[in-house]
Image (cartoon, rainbow, N blue to C red; front, side):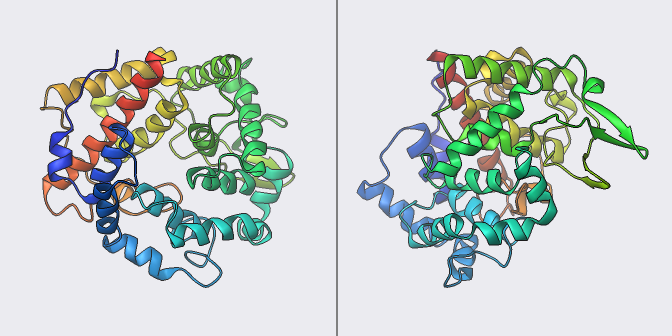
Length: 344
């Protein structure tokens, strides 16, 4: 049974983005009540939200590129994470650009995109599909297509016994063996924000795949070979799914929060002992500190929003309370998804 975690401190002391998301995602309040609309208006005053919206060009793009920092991808991430309504014109125009400008997106990512897309490894099309899904378009044909690609990636590692069985050396560089569809962070992202794939069979398969990744951890960084070219996969937060949490530094915690939220959203975290133990440790941290996460973390990975980094919803961390609000919210978000799926 899901514990009744107190959320009063966040509702009273946190920024509008956290308050809105606590009320909507954790307390299940509809977003269109007078109170929630008022909170929305305050979210739009957030300096980063204003900066992103003001940067939007007539064609709907947020930033000059698709991937990375100052990009359409990071702009959409920021607006969605900050709690901006899907009905806001900025997100509507960004979603239209995302749906329309497939050729520009592929060109922006270059050979990586073409090779990974052609070989169903999770390239530009999966990034594009994930962004559509977090923007509320989970039934888009591209999203459904790339969910299948993500499931293929998970299934490809089920029968692998050790990480060494998946890799080999090429010119002194560790690479994945040809034909292997090793999953990256975007596989987790698209599965976390979609539901159509969640049959009992698929849930069990994905849980088994994640269990393998946790058992193989920590894993060395491996590249993908395309003839003479070595391509870096989207391995952010995917090299160690079983860290020793008491020893994590700030970058390690950032990656842990990012990855573990996705696993909890996917509905598989409670099925994997190595992941469940980590979440149990998180719960112990909260219960020992008045249901607040008070470990003093601080790193640019939290503050600088890009394709991979960025989790800070408070406008700044000039005081320690703001930091506590951000980490506490992420912690409760993970616990909420973990117990909701566990109780189903």
